[in-house]
Length: 456
Image (cartoon, rainbow, N blue to C red):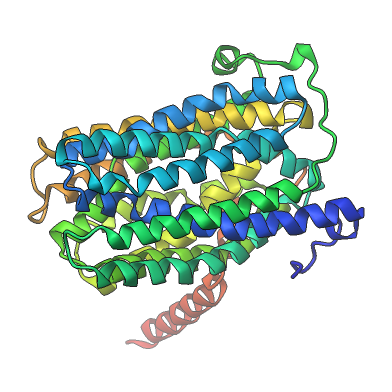
């Protein structure tokens, strides 16, 4: 299965052709595993009886350790001169900690929280520590000008593969009554199996020779923060971290709101998640094409208003079909944000320093994403209710923070690669459905104007 118009990598040498194939196999299994763990981690915490403050810690602390692990990964890669050993070790330990997760429900209520916190922290840390090495590895396999389309195509294929598995897991959890943990044990056990399969694909994947990083280019994290390195990479990292902070201050509590306050079943909860996932996968190749052609900075500017509006709209109603519409909008906006932000960092750094700047960007995003859920949990007990729910007020706070984050940093992002010149307004006009809607509006305006002129 080859994306249309994307030929160069597949017509390259046989090792690279095979590497991209096994990268797809890795993605199929990894998406199925990681997607299920992330989707059902908070429901598992609710089933274990954690409070709002504990859920905030449960969602935040693992991201602190995971983000800080990115500070050591460039040094590991520099010493070994390879990226595959780090990626393989990370997969092995993720499988190990998923297996450990199966025994937590047998503990007494007191130790459960600390055991779950330790296990998820280690799982998240080993998942994150290899991201800079993996991103550098994949970027070396792909030529400039095709990365956005490749990652968009890969995410689309792997995402559509993972969705039926996620729905099956939700139905399985609904089949077990409240207070029973066997459903979660089966779900997380299958996730461990899929992650092991992805590790086998990484093991057989070809790794091209790594470009040696000159000593003069080895920018420390503190120098990176002070702007002494690549300023475009720093600006992008700060913007992405600010948006993640504003988003994750309420992100873990969407599921709390739906399960506890609205009384949804796991199946309905998963259906809403799948609406966003399907939309994400349908649009991601489109965003990849626009990012390669017109620039990722423009894509980020186009979707920023939607990212701001989403949590504000959640405060209006808890109707299932209304929330499904919001998830559809969220899928469009977040597919653009995550793809464009990832590819912007890849384009901003040269091959020799790409892994280091990816890692530093992930540190900023991880720390921001770790602190904000904890703050959200603390705020919940002090916020006034909005429409009967304090969590809705937290959604409104998130919308305001997203607005502020974009106003502060988004204007400083510039295109870092040669792209076609197109204004943001013209890019909006190129979005699916905008052109016919504009035509309908103009036709209506002309007819309305004619009727007004004919009126005596």
